[in-house]
Length: 210
Image 1 (tube, rainbow, N blue to C red):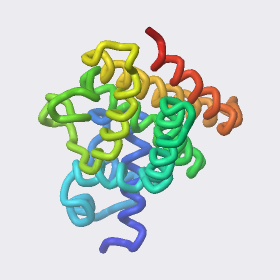
Image 2: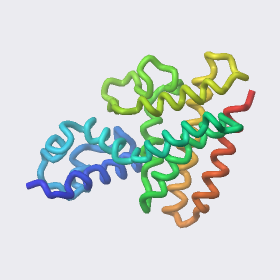
Image 3: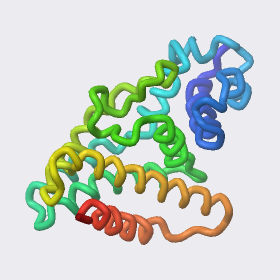
């Protein structure tokens, strides 16, 4: 029998185990065991497949889409459009990290980014690797659109180099927030709001570097 909380337990367990051990270091059976699921068909029951479960993690943890859209619209009137667009990427990410204690979201992203091409912003299939066993995550078009807006602001770079710089900046943000999560669990961490301000400024500097 599937419990009413079984779906959420699977999402939480998948996020945590992938964050700790990587996408290819975790089996569906281990996720079900960690979620307290005795029904071996629970992942198929709730999500149709393993990829469906990972897609559900993304859907569950990207609930700040409205906030991001508001920040993107506000960037049109900002004195510094690049900084405003960078904040539109960083702030919702930080909000998701702050929403749970402890958070595994940044480390989940870090593990996922470890398996895809460095130039993921400018590939024919954005945010997807060549490995057919790698999960396809649906619904990332708004994030890709934001990356494109940021790239358009990098007029100091040749057009072919702009997406690569955005990809580098995105990886920097993910790694920095993953480090914050590890420090938090270790009991040595900085105020997340202050950390966000510094992280945004450093990311803008990275984007503006010639």
